[in-house]
Length: 359
Ligand SMILES: NC(=O)c1ccc[n+]([C@@H]2O[C@H](COP(=O)([O-])OP(=O)(O)OC[C@H]3O[C@@H](n4cnc5c(N)ncnc54)[C@H](O)[C@@H]3O)[C@@H](O)[C@H]2O)c1
Image (cartoon, rainbow, N blue to C red; front, side, top):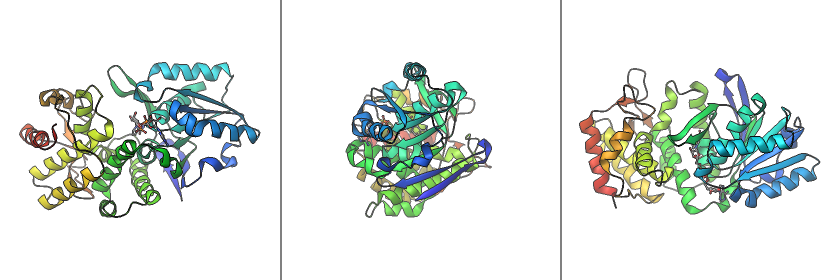
């Protein structure tokens, strides 16, 4: 299955392929123009897929190299980017270098950001290997690193030459990582795809689910590359989730926080009278079938307010939320895709969240 992604604002158009076995049969025409190929990956993915990809490229006569860094969010730093840039200079990479970003969202973020600034920009191809990276991080052009002040605070918008999604790589993904990816899948169903929501209650066809999510993200980022409006809908559940992550000192995984965030923001939609009770209950019924809904008691409710006021969508430090009117439909407020919610309602929704899920 191939989608053609067109980002008019960036004058960029590129294919997104979803297929089994793609990694072992990387289309050589995609790599034709490159003098040197550098695979950027992490320590786990290197062993699983990186080394064999490197061997195949070399066997096909390409000058190929691989550079990796320790797996995990703690590697998404300036220091890792600097290490990769120095490593590419040591092997004399010029503008005719192609970067292959092979891994989860951490690898894609850092490899794309490195490629975007190396020699003022070299081409790169995304090879996502986690569900979260397949349905979210690989598409949309955002690339960045963390600083001591927060997540993805330094970065850029940049687009790849292609996105190649080999769903076979999910076979080695730990169950917990898979469930983090499903938090974003459920989000797509809640903001834009009612049928997907019900599909998730039946049998799971990974290729179909990934395609539906990529199509939604495609339509959103093609219309609003830089998050001036519509792209905000992708933040459903994320205002609360980001506050939970920050208040936990980033020990609560993003996927787990998004599950809780979606429950809480659906509750707000319900308290405000936008979302019917039975729709809300259907959401609450689905969420735990994909991930444990556990809010660590160590996250103090009061500390959430501090982080909510620092959310990227806040205006004059007041947090704004994406709300839904039914499963598959996001609300629009005077042309804006997020809105202020009275503090009383935010408190009520958070009280409910703590009562239900704090452990
Ligand atoms: N740029 C964007 O638009 C965007 C969007 C969403 C998320 N992100 C970023 O993505 C990151 C999270 O991504 P993630 O959840 O993929 O985390 P990750 O990249 O840390 O991967 C999770 C773990 O799975 C391992 N792994 C990867 N593929 C595997 C496979 N096929 N088999 C076995 N293990 C495998 C990794 O080595 C890692 O240990 C965050 O930093 C987030 O900010 C970026």
